[in-house]
Amino acid sequence: MSLNPVALEELVRRVLLEDVGPGDVATSAVVPEDVRCTAQIVAAAPGILCGHPVARAVFRALDPSVEYTPLVPEGSEVDAGAPVASLSGPARPILTAERAALGLLQKMSGIATATRRLADGIKYYHARLVAGWETLPGLRLLEQYAVRVGGGQVQPYGLAGGVLIRSGHLALAGGVREAVVAARKSAPPLSRVAVEVASLEQVQEALDAGADILVLTGMDPETVKRAVEQASGKAVLEACGTADPSHLIEIAKTGVDIISVCDLAHSAKSIPFRLSIEGAKAQEKEA
Image (cartoon, rainbow, N blue to C red; front, top):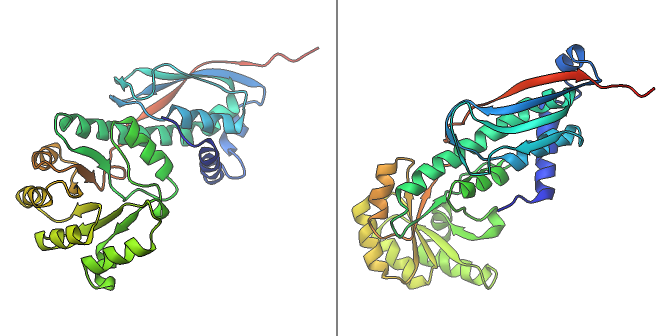
C-alpha cells in the first residue's frame, strides 16, 4: 500500500504554501539558524497510526537533511503516550513543519481508527466496507489512503474513474433505464455502470437495463434484504450505511455486497499527536 509520490509531493507543496507562506516568523526570531535538535512525535490518545509517509514528506520538504524514523509500523494500534516517530536535524525546519505534519497525521490516523472500528465490526459478514464518494478534493489522496490502512476499501479516485449515475442524472435522463442505457453507450467499454436506486421498482429497472452495481439509497435493512433477494446475484449491491457500528451490522446481515459509509472520511475524529523536543545544540562550525 503506497501513495503516489508525485501527487504527494504536490499536495505537500500546497499545504506548506498555505501554512508557512513567506516564512515562520516565530521560529526565525527565536531559534538560531545553526541549532540542531532531536524530537519525538508522541500519541496523545489511543488509535491507529496512519500517515508516516506524509509526515516524513512534510518535514523533508523544508529540509531534506531532516531524518524521520518511524518507531511503530503504519497501521499499528498505539496507546496514549506512545512515541510513534523520531526526528533529528536542523531545528528550524522541524518546528516550522510541525503544525502541518502533525495536522495531517492526526486527520489520517482518525480516519484509519474509525475505519478499523467499523471494518472489525462486520469482518465476519460477506459485505465489504467502502468509504463513500464524499471525500474532499485536495485531501482525497490522503483520506482514501487512510481508509485502506484502516482496513476499508475506496471508491474511484475521481469522476473519471467510474460511472455512478446519481439521482440528479436520473431526473434529467428520464429514469433508471434511460440513464443506464445512455451510460452504456457513452462510457468506455470496460467500465462498470453503477446507479442509485431508491425503491424495489427501481431495483428491477436497473437489473433489466443491465446495470453492474446498484447503490441502494434511503432503504431500511428489511428493504435492503428484499433487494438482495430480488437481485439474486445479477448485480453487485451496495447499501449506504452510517458510522454507527450497530447499524452497519444490521445492514451486513442483509447479505449485501458492499456497505458504503458516506461520512467515514470527513466525520472521523482526529487522533491527537504532539512534538516533544528532546535535545538541542548548535552545529559546530568548521575551522
